[in-house]
Structures are given as C-alpha cells and as structure tokens.
Amino acid sequence: MRLLVTRPQPEAERTAAALRGRGHQVDSAPLLRIEPIPAAEIDRGPWSALVVTSANALRGIEWHPRRAELLGLRIFAVGGRTAAAVDATGFIDVIEGGGGVQELTQQIRAWAQLEKTPPGPLLYLAGEDRSGDLAADLAADGLVVVTAVVYRAVKAERFPPAVAVALASREIDGVLHYSRRTAETYIDCARAAGLVAQALAPAQYCLSRQIAAPLVAAGARTTRFAPRPHEAELLKLIGPAK
Image (tube, rainbow, N blue to C red; front, side, top):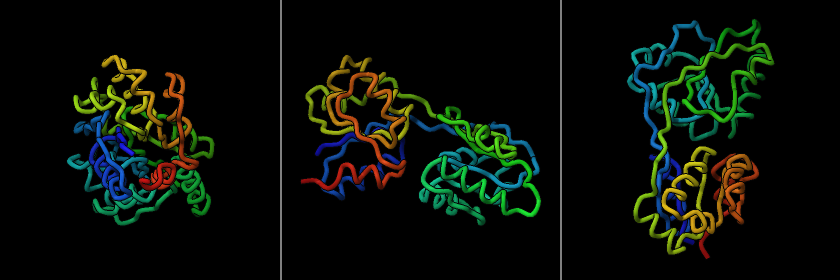
C-alpha cells in the first residue's frame, strides 16, 4: 500500500521507516510543527514528581533555565517510547505509565496510595492544546497537579505539493492519524486544497476512536482505530504489504 503519515517530525520519519520495513510505500506530511516555549513559566514547587504525556515536553524544556533542577525528580511518562526518551535526556527516576493517559493516571494513583504520606503537588509538563484534563482527573483522588505549558503544536495550512498531487490522483491507499488535532488539520488542509472527497477516500487509520471522530464527521467512509492507543496496535491494523 501507499501510505501517508501525518504526525510531526521526528516521529513521522520513525513511523515511516517502520512501515517501509513492512514493505509499504510511504509519504510524510507532518501537519503539526512542534515549537518549544522558551519562556514557559515553571514554578519552583516543591514538586513530588513530574508528569509528561509526550516526548515533545522534553524538547520543550531542553533549554529551559530550570531544567537541571527538574532532572532529580521522579517522572511519570506515558508509553514506552516517551519513557525511553525521558531516560535518554538525563532523568534517572523514570516510571512508565502504560500506553495512554488513562493508564498513566492509574499508575500515578497506585503510586500515591503506596506513599506513607500524601504526596505533594505534581508538575505536568504539557502542550498548549490538550485533548483531556489530567489535572482534573487526578484532583478527584486528592492529588494536586500544576500544569506548565512548555510547547505548542503549530498547524500546517496546506499539504506539501507532492502529497496534494498524490491525493488528487487517488494514489494514497491509507492515512495514519496520531492525534485529534492532526486529524482536524488534515481536513482543514483538504478543504484549502479543494480535495475533501479525495483526502477522505483512502482508509483512515487512527490511534483511537476519539481521533477518528472528526474524520467520520467530515465524511470518511473507511476509518479504523487501534483497540488501544499504542502505535504497535495501529500498525497491526495495517499489517505487512501483500
């Protein structure tokens, strides 16, 4: 199959390489550009732990003046890839909290219950746009989570020219979507190019049902979503080239 990967770089190239390894032809159209927020406000705490739901948060604090102070804290990271990225950036106490935010919050709850004394506030290093409310979810358990926005995702306005041509000629067999905002940006770019029907004609492979929702609403006829929000599960839907 000829597939289109829409996630930001550098993740887009990693996914493309995995798909090529399965024998597929792959095009990349990173529809979001990740930008750190150098002047992000990060209070001094004290913090009992950090929380990250994306490796982009690590890039967001790469040059932050308070980064060195945060390295000594325990950090909860969603998914194996994010946890590995955290470990590679110098954090030494890394806890992997499953493949999705829901599993991450469950891990944090379990940790808090095992503590001899109630833990103090947690610092959530987050993006500007978030699909859920991790702080509110944990507040129900009496945990205080302070959110620091350390990066933003800037939407593309148009498809790359080569991708627009491939969609217009219906050469793309499937499109991979890793976030709801990316799926929405895909639709916006299709409208800007006058290619809505062509862009929605391929199978739309989504990391979750929530991500698939705007595509279904826009008229996509073939949407498939992973049973769990793990990339491995999404790639299983596609399978090897035949």
